[in-house]
Image 1 (tube, helix red, strand yellow):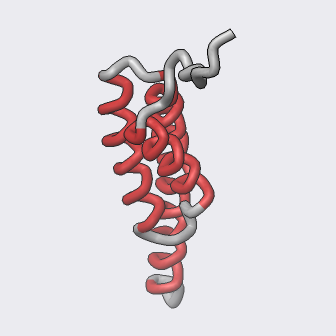
Image 2 (image 1 turned 180 degrees about the vertical axis):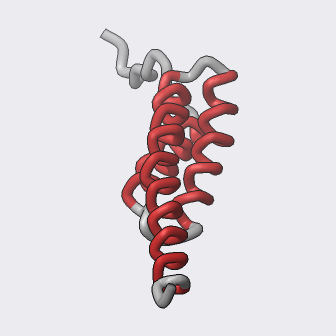
Length: 91
């Protein structure tokens, strides 16, 4: 038996992990106007780099980044429609 520590077969890189965390954070923080969009964009960038390097978490981060755009866009549309209805409410 050897006393050497075994290395993981395919360790995730920092880019893949950063993309995955940004994807999760953008879904959770979609209501913080601006922060959700920035995190979603960062998720796409980091995960795209990791995915091009054929890393496992890269694909997961890309999927989370795409999913995070749904609540961000819906929240933005709600804010615009609500703002217009308040502004034009006296018609």
